[in-house]
Amino acid sequence: MSKKIVAFGASNSKNSINRKLANFAAHQIKDAEVNLLDLNDFEMPIYSIDREKESGIHPLAEKFKAILRESDGILISFAEHNGAYSTAFKNIFDWISRQEKDVWYSKPMFLLATSPGARGGRTVLEIAMNKFKFMNQNTLVDFSLPSFNENFSETEGITQPDMKAAFLEKLALYEAALK
Image (tube, rainbow, N blue to C red):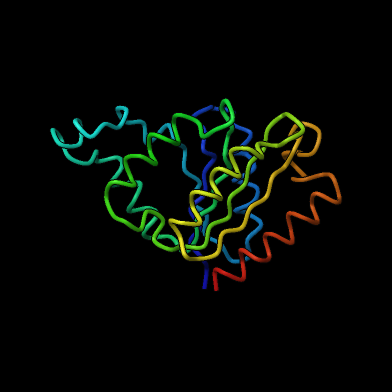
């Protein structure tokens, strides 16, 4: 039986390296049906309590939550903007967190990050892990890929052997949680 994985790069860049990493990672999962989302398809007004009171939950936030609900697992690769989430992700997160207490439906989550730099988005990944561990009682696995342009190939994936081995170890933990 195939597993339904929803995956996305937490960025609205058309050439997002985090979307590339999310796509690669999701397609490494055995027997997976991957739904690769583009955050540009979920662009909404900036969340505010006043807007919610006036108009209710935005329909795109409801659609995003429905996609999460129908999945068996969630895979996110975070872009780091000034040491935190991208505005595109944070706005979606703000909207979807208003609908139900269980934002992620207690689905196993594989949280990744990459950047062109040597830290590989580690700061935003730490923020996400620290936040999501209180929002999801299921398995949370994380992986950071530093220096994306030197350590990733669109045809081969992760090219550095030690990093590839570390990724596969984390992937195995995530896959085990999907069963």
